[in-house]
Structures are given as structure tokens and as C-alpha cells.
Image 1 (cartoon, rainbow, N blue to C red):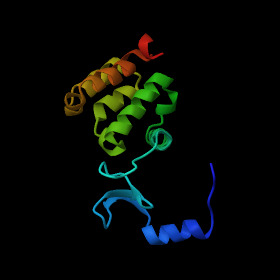
Image 2: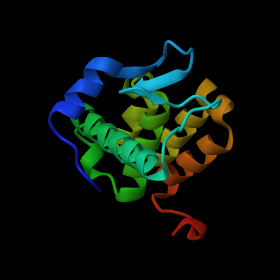
Image 3: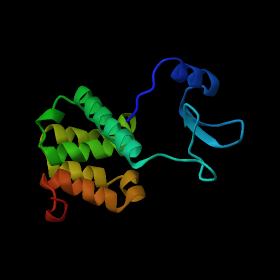
Image 4: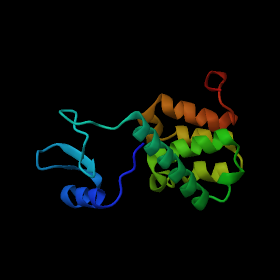
Length: 148
């Protein structure tokens, strides 16, 4: 990959602007970053590598947030940590914190109770099979053979 530095990068940032959130450009196209048109109508979207990069950053962010929020998180085995990352990714840490009973059960190693508490929620109704899969990771502490 060629790396561009110096005046070109700074000029493009000045001309296009730098936006962390999606916005409508002057041509009324959905745009992000430094003039990246991601509109379905005429945009270039994101490459597979860019999507993977964003995902890895989001996973790392969730992992760090969970580690800072719950002292018991690092003591979980990998499948249960992955389940917690999945929950944090989906809900955000603020909404995840609302699952007080489930998180308390997690902290005590009561994984069946924690799974039941997560399943007894509006979140579980909204996400359906995702909730079943994530709570099964919490309950069992291992990935099903099909995911290994």
C-alpha cells in the first residue's frame, strides 16, 4: 500500500472536512471520514479490509470497556468473554449495565441464572436467535461444535 503524507493529506482534509459521523455532503450523498461517499447511489462504500478493521477496533473497544467496568470479566473463560463482548457490541456498555441481575449473577459465576436473566428481557425478544446463542455461551462456557 502506498502511503501519502504531507500537503496532499492536509489539503484533502481541509477541502473535504473530517467527520467522525455520517453526514449529507453538498451533493446530498451519505458521506463519512474525509469525503468518503458511502451512499448506495453512487458511493464506493467500504472495502472488506476497512469493514474488518472497524470491526476489530470495535471488538477491542468493547473488551477494554468491559475490563474497566467489571473486575470479574478477565476471569471469565474465552467463550464467556466473547459473549460479553457480543452483548456490549450490540447494546453498548450503558445499556448493558441495565442488566443488573444478570451481571450480578455473572460476577458470582452463576451462569445459568445470568443466562436466564439476559433471556428474560426486551433485548432477547428484539434480537431473537442472537440472544439464544449468546446466552448459551454464557450458560455452557463453550462454543458449539459447529462454531469451533
